[in-house]
Amino acid sequence: MRRMRPEPLEAAAFAPFGAVIEALGSSEAINDGTTQRFSNLATLDLRAPRSDPVIGIYVASARAFPLRIARLERHRQAAQVFLPLGSQRFIVVVGGVADSPQWEGLRAFLSAPGQGVSLARGCWHHGLIALGDGDRFAVIEGGDYRRDTEEVAAPGPIELDFTSS
Image 1 (cartoon, rainbow, N blue to C red):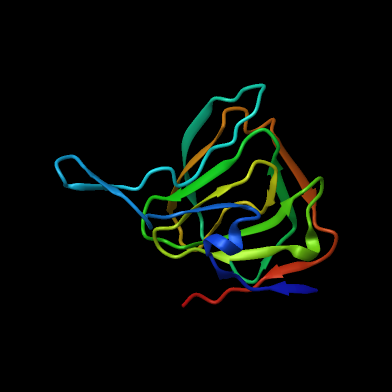
Image 2: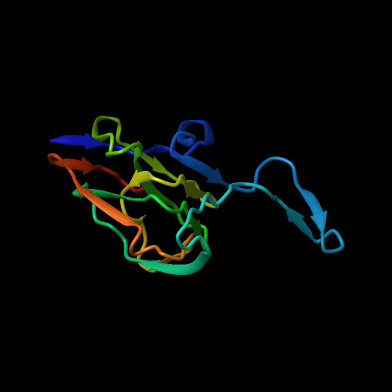
């Protein structure tokens, strides 16, 4: 049984899988100085046949731990962005951008409040891992999401261990 624990979600460590989205770095004041605009935090890589992005809201149930990692999925035509609509944390499990998941290099990241992620197009990942019931996320993805989802079963037992703190 392979066991893994999440590491903090940091831009440099997550870079091979996509981008961390958070309000850090330079900004500009807009709306008569009442708003700080943090722009160009991530890109949305979309490919044909249907490259129009869609925006949805996912309402998640809390996962129980240890969590069995039974499969990973990827989307070859579009990147996928997850932005929490509150101050909740979540876990993202990624297995690389390759023809098949990199099971030995599987990594888990625990977000801080206010962080989101943009998964690179083709990045193998586990489905949304929410820590609270009713956690809500704005999700930006390719319009052909269902047909663009490819899943692969894990080659053996893998568990994600997490104790909330």
